[in-house]
Image (cartoon, rainbow over all chains, first blue to last red; front, side, top):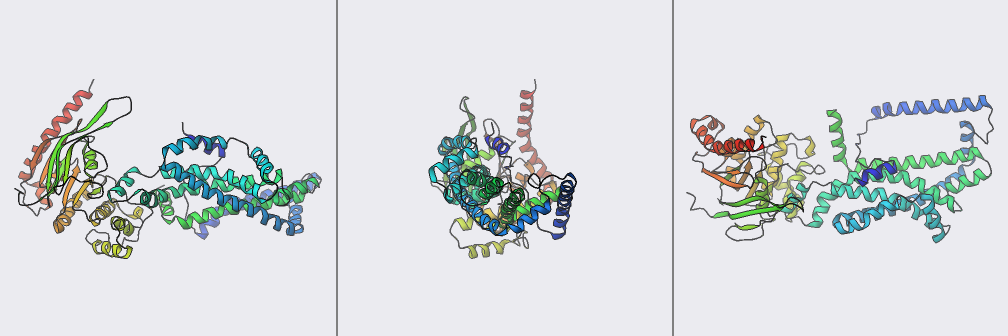
Length: 283
Length: 267
């Protein structure tokens, strides 16, 4: 039985370290052009469909309507985005600290791991909205329940991936370090931590996606501000273009978070990038 | 013949067993191994794969406990871990450290300041054929360079006794040959005491003062040969009839064992 791979399926994320490529503007453009062009085509088709079908704006607004809503609501969108982003970053940060701490504790002691690991998996099988309701009941309508929910959903992929990464360290390397006089802490610092980093970053990527989902649920359950709250408000007013505009801002936040993790990985693991390039060259 | 030199490493009646899994009986990995290394000697252990050579090195490095027998380092029975240089089968260069920072690993762990450690490593780059590559990631090095880097890392750690586990096992035949001659020249410069494990009889013979042949299951020493070849040795030596005769002496017991193993395996 392989728990990590099953949970990877569960989360819809890959838990293996992913190859990263070096930055080359021309190659980046070549890579970005197809999705950009396809996106423009899609938007055009959407606009054409709305124009031809004559559907009401409250059912399906055209992209231009959505763009107008974005401009019209820019003030409230910006302040709500600020609130939501703050909740995400606090929860995400807490998840990183907790996830890595738990992972180090679990990899340090088999007993701790056996005691905790199954509960971690089980905790992930509870639907996020259900958790969000309970957390709001406990902690009210402030920023705290959102931070907790975001931390809860992001914690798992970070902890599991870091455990896997710490375990993936070559035992021969640890033996070598022992013969060179390295103690437990030095082995963790010099070998296990660096070899776990690519795994940690994969976990961070999955966690970034989950954090955005989590924050919206938490805001839906009980809030007075934020983008999730704004979606509810607009949808109660059947202001559909404004709902679409809010969703677009959420998407941008998600993509930005995801890209920031990728950028950080690029900076933090130069050696890993070299490894990935080598493999590409071989292929 | 080495009575004037001090004994660096003595192994006496060493056995090692391990439990293959909880339900089965213990497996005897090593039985009654005795050997000794005098200061500045180069000794090799030759044997088929799985004969326990690596286990023996791990016991001597202090990584695996022996069940019986004793190991003396410079005449005293002390903890071996951290006192004996050990080069594992794979180079184990850390991919996240540059070549230079891999080389200084041992110095760093023994408390040498980073700049001093780097300066020491830099002085050896030329001899180890790594000059100009100190800033490269290990990935960018060839197989031979990686092995030389791993060897330099072992040398720089500053232990008197070095245990080398198949250092050239992963290299192609031509690179191996070149590395042998190079290793001898490096060793002759400061004469560390080396115990090398290999399955290559020619390699063992060319490099060593003494060769022990090991046999598997349980791992034990079946033949010991003092190598009478004069030093310094050059690669041409391997073509001499004297060399061929010695090689034959070592190969005979190994061939016999391989044949017996095949008979057992056949239905």
